[in-house]
Length: 360
Ligand SMILES: NC(=O)c1ccc[n+]([C@@H]2O[C@H](COP(=O)([O-])OP(=O)(O)OC[C@H]3O[C@@H](n4cnc5c(N)ncnc54)[C@H](OP(=O)(O)O)[C@@H]3O)[C@@H](O)[C@H]2O)c1
View 1 (cartoon, rainbow, N blue to C red):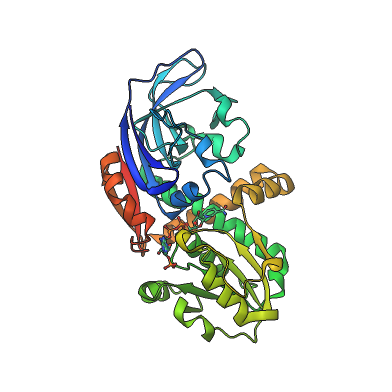
View 2 (cartoon, rainbow, N blue to C red):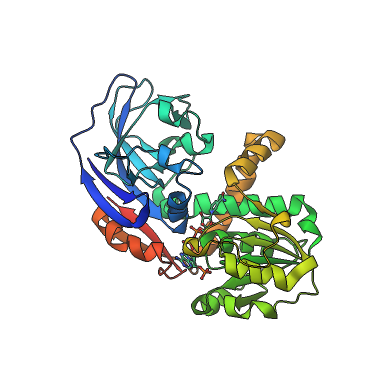
């Protein structure tokens, strides 16, 4: 078994570890991981590894001193061996996996369309991460949308939930939604949702200078500014900020610029993870962390899981298809290939119109 790991105290440092074959016991299945996506979202899992327990999903092999972490990824895997009732060799699952050649799981709540990993170390982690879709059983399933599902599903599900949260709060009485790190896929998904909604306020994107042109071209932001230009945003208009960057200095400047017109700041992401100290002017009392799994759980309770599933899936399918006009998949070979490109993802050097898919 081969596994990609990063040092928990310095996640620019990586290693590939080989271990003995995994032994499958009664009740377990062994999966061969086929493909997964890799974006800034995965880097955030590392940044929040301790705080939000992302390190807990997949224990690191050959790590006696507990120094290394395994970043979860979204992808597909095939059942290689099964000692679990109702799960067959050869079937494919979609869900949360380690960047490893193989993984062992303990299926529980095995239903026709899904199952959960009931491994004890995952029992108290958010259920949304422990569910696996039995894709072969899905009505009309083809592999045609696999790449979008790995890359965009977890991000656009968040975008869907963010739009829902904003709309549910009457846009925080704002006349503009300002999206930080506007070139990230989660932001683009939110911009799609707002663009489709006639009731939504206008949408301002904030991004790095080098991404302004390509993000403007998408045609879903009303205006795109670079971080350097953020004082050009109309501060006479009430604003709600949805931020994927966590760039403390930038947010401090933005809050200072908007002052009383900064109605609410939803802190969603950490793409600028190396710059996350809150800057002067940051308005803490009107800022709040957003955690998609909590919003999803809340809505599933209110709407019922079927309605939530139907509404969110329609949105994700529609916007994933739209994304084909600008998004190109960059296919990376194996964990060695991931190891080579990892630094570029970490430093935000992957062009926004590229999606990384690792095939093992
Ligand atoms: N709270 C939640 O529940 C939740 C759920 C899903 C996603 N998220 C978060 O949303 C964020 C976006 O994820 P994604 O996968 O959509 O991102 P992505 O598409 O990989 O975003 C890439 C963009 O992020 C910025 N970036 C990345 N690394 C950077 C670095 N080191 N320095 C400066 N800029 C950097 C750049 O955008 P700019 O030039 O535009 O800044 C870059 O174009 C992540 O932090 C993710 O964890 C949160």
